[in-house]
Length: 396
Image (tube, rainbow, N blue to C red):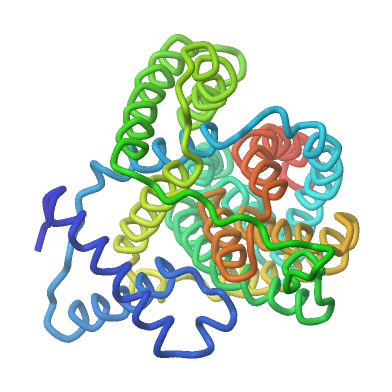
């Protein structure tokens, strides 16, 4: 059964509704802030696996809308980035990078060490390391081709896809529970009940038809500008992903064009459209999950991924949360760290939205984590992998 783009969109909406119902019905899911697209997506994956194994029915979704939805989401991240707050977020961004970049080396060392302990080629450890877990499906596919051509690593492409998919799921599963664990240990004053000395914040202005229309127009404008910039930059020494150009376009519109043209931006409308785009993108991504294919994944790689989850959680709790100040913002950034260190920046944002939706806004975290996960971490990952592959163990 093959779905067209409209049917795929309807399926994504149904997956989100399913996730919402499950999160309400199952207390564990709500208590530990599991994102609704992950909950609904896993349930749908179980259904499709049953159809495949029991009746031989396969459901193929159309991926046409996934790209634009992801670009639209990152555009809203840019539109929501008020650079006047960089005085607050700037030092935090540097500090967060000082936590994240060393983790790349830790993740690859753990992967390679486990692979060698399991009598596997060290490159299998890299496929279960930052190549796929931080790099995602695109980076994993690129390096899998290199490993196949230069080292004749059999099945590299399948392993890369499976590892990236497992990481995407696990990054969305563990982020919320870890943040919940941290917040229960230390009750942050940031979301404590207002007192006489700390008046409650005024309720945010609700989105209107006009504000949503203006925001939608700006998103489309940024998508066009971002796409044009991406085309101009093709072949540059440093290749930036398309979504980053859209994010930059959003930042430029928010901080330069909108004030110049006296266009009033609505943060609630930006958040609304951004959340919708992200949720639909994740639901469509989860709809492509084929559990029966993951079941054929080699046991050693599964063991490596399982250990990587433990490594990431320990690093998040013992390093990231502590270095970032053991605050509410630090807990939200820790959830985001687990999202992109195991899956993708979109998963990181979903984790943070799940936590902030329950406890309150975390503006610094939502500025620092997307910039780190969408840009800085990709550059750092490329540099680390380039250095790691020069080690003698990979010349065998």
